[in-house]
Length: 586
Image (cartoon, rainbow, N blue to C red; front, side):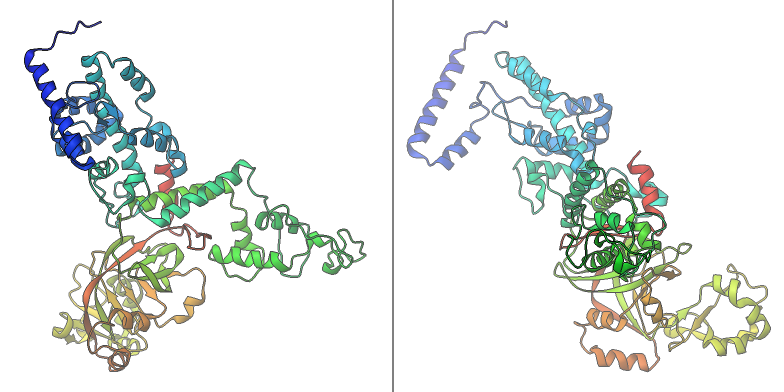
């Protein structure tokens, strides 16, 4: 036991003075004023006696680098402690703040977020807390443990929060994941200060909450799917099943169990006995009630098809059968990967923006944080993938030209241009020009050596004039980017009737371009619907600058939960789920 020295006269006098001040405060001050006075008295009013220990940069660096799993969080720890002048964060008056146990409880449930609790259970806090309790009579030992625990708690928080708020995978470090949307810029040291109630924030850091409701909805469905998994999953439908409404088959029982639950079997009645005898095999009228494919089961199949991006015709077979037989474990993995993508999304969207979800083939228009309308889109085919990135729409172009990529000139048009350039261009309603925009000047196509021209030597622009043959249709929407990708109309409206619409060379074709143009130009004087249509009819390309640039996000989510709580799944059309799985699950 450490021998304690007798207090000096100065120490005794100072303690007496502080006591007198507190008595005075009790008599004459409000509770808030008393708290302020205690805050002002320099470290003298601590529970255990003596000032709260302080850290320094050397200690923080040494403690963080001593544990390999904490090294990556050193910068956050340095920012956190520097901002608080190296005061401890997790102790008040030698007592742990309640947020410490809250955080450790959150980490114990990290699996609910698709994270592994063991990744964050790096320090044995139970032992450290026991050691701290045993050291209360030993000031030196107690202070040393408080410092050790404080840094360990901060490091643990940063390790967990980095994964929870920013993702376990860095999408920009893996080329095949293809994700160039602007990153989530959560400042984790500020988030920790919010948790410790040292600053205010509009985000849910206080309660370790997710930043997006879309993530939270996926999390809730994840719990439901894991419950299904624990109960053995769902029944498989026989591979050869082919069912149309009104048919009968022994496979109906499995289908009913898959979509309506095992208990949802129609009761026998006088008209439809549970077991029927028939001399006509396969006759629906004579089949047992449990084998008839009709009524609510047909409706359940149609809803399933809608939620999986399929044609809701009620026919079971082909793609519908394949989607029905995707295992619950595969669906859980899909949910987890899309939760991870939400961690990459900026912590807050702007109030107004456009969002194209590529696997959904849908454009969402959001105003004042609410979706005002959406429309089908066509995206890039497998060999010409639409890239995933974010930018800002700046221009609406009415009656646009279509500039023909040189790859099409070289691979498709060259023989025809060599044979008769002028006739080919007249038939395609195209022209060759030099320069850009209003300064572009026509070039005689017969003056070009089409047989030998290469992309390197090509110095002109081959473009299709505005009009009904134009590949961009009547309108395009420009957000200048290095991918040369934009939204535009198309003359091939028939393609929007397809459920899977990967037909473009990378740009996004929208189903209702006039509606979108009218919406984007609603605050632009002189550009109502009639003006837009007149400009298009004039076949003179017109660039219209938006009053304000509008954020646009081209993203890739293969599963999501709508506001009604229904979960949607889509195909991994570009294989990005497969690429992410290699990183996320390994």
